Length: 416
Image 1 (cartoon, rainbow, N blue to C red):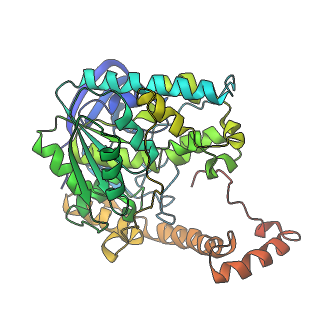
Image 2 (cartoon, one colour; image 1 turned 180 degrees about the vertical axis):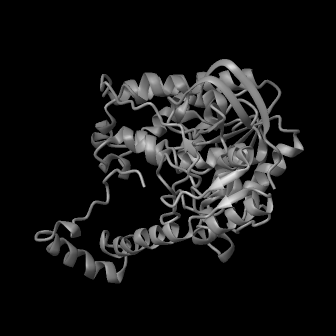
């Protein structure tokens, strides 16, 4: 079970959602909370005309001592891009809608600015948390580049197979210093903290996508929570052409979708281990001076992966040796991590905590299947990914000429 969330009265303070993730986990009162960073989810509820904020929906439900099921909240897809929550009385704080002035489209300028800001940010956080261990969840270039920067504190690397061994070689071949420990983990589900993972993530994300949470928590406890956890969240969507660029609104996608996918990983680790959980690609200066300045479609004309060029600058203009491949670990799917059972388990935990529960069973069940049926149909008829979809997609495209209901809208943004 999660440790108790302490309450903090900061009624005279105005704070951003990013700054809240640097504070101890808890239930807060603020003069104002400004949500200007798409990555870090924060939730609020009104109790006796007082607004309380937290990184945890569960903590706010416990504070209220009652739960009213929101039938609109389902676990149909593997994550939930929404400003609603599982409880009708708790909502996600809305991100300030922002877009780019597109004043930068020169890749060389983006490379140099990004490298300078990344180095400044690592130095800033190392100075702010002097004496802390820095724990890096390491996958591909988004996180590999962290280690190429000039770092003063001791860093620990967690990397899972099948690319864990590749990352160990990346560190060895580049003779990277200030890595105190390299932890290579098997691609095997660790279910020792399933209940904590469920509560800490508030059913927003399929738990089959959660990796290494028990090991992260073990390390934070070993160092008495004097640890900063780093993820490389969403770097490829800024420096490479990918599915993000196919959505009509590149920036709304981040507010709604990236924040409630990768952002939930930050929320999850924060709520369990009570440490700062950060990503270099969402630091304030990078957002204001690059992300909301560049033309995001500059990547369509790139001839190479400019993360390599950023890495070169970070590495004192030495050419880093990257692994030739970046294989993905598997989803840790199992009966225990089945997302379709997550909500029932979450509510069962609340009932055992003596929370007054209103389930809204009829409406919730209706909404579940109302979403699930078209979701399954779309799974097999919106993209050619299996034998049956290769048959169904052309049929659907043909029918869409005459019936709008069959139109494929894979990149339509909507809050669900």
